[in-house]
Amino acid sequence: MEKELNFTDILTNAFSLGIKNLASVIGCLILWILTIWIPYVNVGTTIAIVTLPAAISKGKAINPLEIFDKSNYKFMGEFFLASGLRGLIISFAAIFLIIPAIVMNIAYTLTILLVVDKGKGAADALKISNRATFGHKWTIFFWMLFFGIVLFAIPYYILNWIWTPLAVIWMIVISVVALGGKAYIYGKLTEDIPDEA
Image (cartoon, rainbow, N blue to C red; front, side):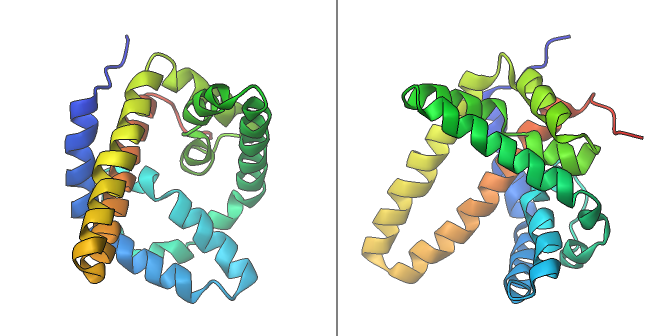
């Protein structure tokens, strides 16, 4: 059965999921910043921060202290491998002008979430992400474009011109909305993908 992913649902859910988790995400980011000087601990907290959309997609309340969960270290090798492969593929695609790199970025946007949330290996996560986003790339692209220009850049520069602290507040709120959008896309496109045993 073909999954339906439309722009309006992404926009609505991005705001509802993002605002619902605003305080928790800010707590996670503060704890992550506090651990930035502790190299090994920071790897685990960085994995937790990068994969927040997977936790948000499940609709559960996020506890900021979960970024210290030891299970994040279990995926360290696959996390780095998947990140490296994804970056390498996108960089290689950029050689053929920018459009293939944009397409590959969208195709592999779920890779890291699949590694940590579903326990997939790096190569499997890349394949699954590509398959899951197939037929939905235009919708995801327009969401990313709309978010980047209409929700982020234009309001940020207008608010920065009016009063800089207001622009900073908007940047924080809209960043959480971006997480909500990614969480909705991830949840919708991977709901039937089983976890690895």
